[in-house]
Amino acid sequence: MSAVEQMSALLPDTAAISEQGHLTIGGCDVAELAAEFGTPLYIFDEATLRRTCAEYRKGFGQSYSDTLVIYAAKAFLNRALATIIREEGLGIDVVSGGELSIARSVGFPAEKVYFHGNNKLREEIELAISWGIGRIVVDNLHELSLVNEVAQEAGITQDMLIRLTPGIDAHTHRHVTTGVIDSKFGLPIALGLAEEAISKAMSASNVELVGLHVHLGSLIFSVEPYQEAIKIVFQFAAEMRDEYGLDFREFSPGGGFAIPYTRDDPAPDVGYYASAIAEAIHAHSEEFGMKPPRLIVEPGRAIVGRSAVAVYRAGVIKDIPGVRKYVSVDGGIADNIRPALYGSRYEALIANKAAENEAEMVTIAGKFCESGDILAKDAKLPEVAPGDIIVIPVCGAYCLPMASNYNASLRPAIVMISEGKARVTRRRESYDDLMRYDVA
Ligand SMILES: Cc1ncc(COP(=O)(O)O)c(C=O)c1O
Image 1 (cartoon, rainbow, N blue to C red):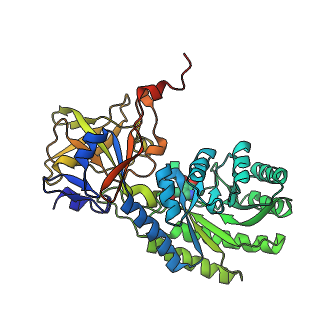
Image 2: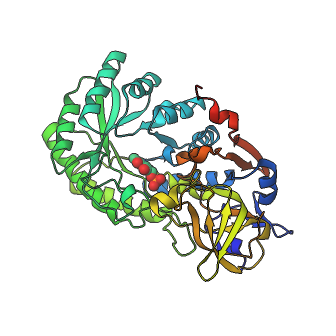
Image 3: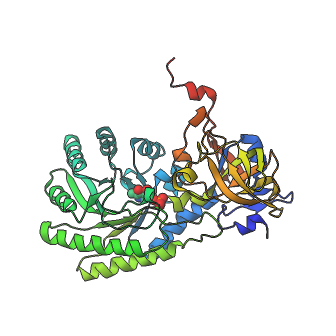
């Protein structure tokens, strides 16, 4: 079986092998794209993106008809992607004035935009409110007053949700777990802060509290944390209804749905999450005598992760006999910090040798001045030579948005493959770009 077949769950849907034995995406030869656009290069596949959007819309819609899927833009956002998300009928979750501006620039419907973040700035809140944003997800008491104040100045009533901290450990990496009490995000239920926020929101002059939100973390492989959180939130909502008259119309269990990154870590499909979440909502709505609220889900990684590959050119090959063979590529930690930050694991393949059998185990290293700049440990590849085009699958989420100019490097070009053609959706940076904001 070829590497492409073995990695079919990790590569974009349209990945195939050409007659020449090259990896193709959407009919385009990846090695040719690397030659045309340079490396490092990020290649997104529009067909995969549209498929995942539809899968989430339908998957949740079938289990729970009153669902709005909103894409968590922090996973990756540029204008081309925002346009696809809008066309696919999803909403969007933004966490900054920047993400908001990108969404706005492509005519995203403001009412389908949710604004998250633990320290929204006054000017960001003003921008959101002046645009007519659908919901602000209030994270803390300070922000509640600020949103009320800005809404008052604008002469409007702003719809909002409150982000709760349910006190649940989703057993994922500590950098991406957010539901525990000791978190910078959200208002803990257990300590009374969430109740204080509800009581303040219910009596504030210019906000309308329409629902409650939790986000438990990222890469959550099991439904149990969601089920546990739903029980806690619904019980709290019932208490707040009885105490303050809360009308619990919207509920969001956040995002965090897992995807596979390597051949040996399969992830559940959308139906698994959707049916468990829907069942828990119905059960606890009934238990507490409430009308089931509208469900808002916020997948980020699951929408974009698999739609993109990162493409590099192999350079120096350092074989340390009996220890390890390093293959250094022309990108690394500056365009993908995930392995260094989270210990994330990746597979790799060679675009120009996609039909060849695996022959050796190598470690793909980046070119940056950090020993931790390793992209894929123990990758099984055909024999590698300098100049080979190395492809890392599942690079659509949380790589480019965290990219930097470390070592004064240039951020990569991004192309989108649509209907057999590649178009640049972000050009590669130049040395002039690097110095553009310097004042000598
Ligand atoms: C509030 C919120 N919603 C959704 C997400 C998306 O998570 P994921 O990309 O794991 O689906 C995040 C990620 O950090 C988040 O903070």
